Length: 305
Image (cartoon, rainbow, N blue to C red; front, top):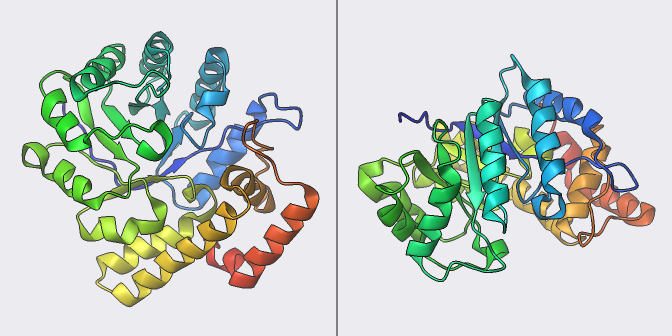
């Protein structure tokens, strides 16, 4: 299988909910329009930012159907995250993604019963990837959420011959040593899009060409300017854009990132609703305070396309 490497920004999208916590799939169209207007090339749906662990299997299937309805014929491409603690559910979602003509699928590892060694991780991912053999498969490395500390470069070493449609790794880790080892694996055969928004510049310096991030939903223009500055060799400008990313994420994380990020989306005219518990929503006073803080740092000017 020949895999086209991911270029530019891939937004890890929010799952939209009504105030009562039910799915609000009508908003997906507005999400897709917003991403395209702000220079995002792909949507990564149903992942961590999409609160995948708080969705039922049927909700995840319905979310996928809706995204492909609204992006049919559009430039925006869709990658489906299919990871789950239940491998049968993951296989179900992967098979559906192939039927819907996704450009790729990705899966994080089961994290309640964790794979105890790399061989078990490879076998788990192989079972998922085998359910969508015509699609590129990306292992989703995110140790801060899964609690799995197995080496991703060793995963590639063992999985290269076991998973025929393995395209690479969605690398959401701050371990830039491992990032380099993954990029160098098998003479650079694998695509390793980077997933830590607040240190993108470091990954670009190490050869990254694509990135998957949650803050691309509301701050894509910052990162597009960062990439452009890096490509023209203007490191001063690139560092300035990266610090804008850091300042923004710092403000959101201080109030609970998921709830604050969703509140920020509403401020930009794309109301994706509150998060589901156990992620907490911001109340009206917290939202007002967050808006004030974002205004003070210049966020709303920074994110104009």
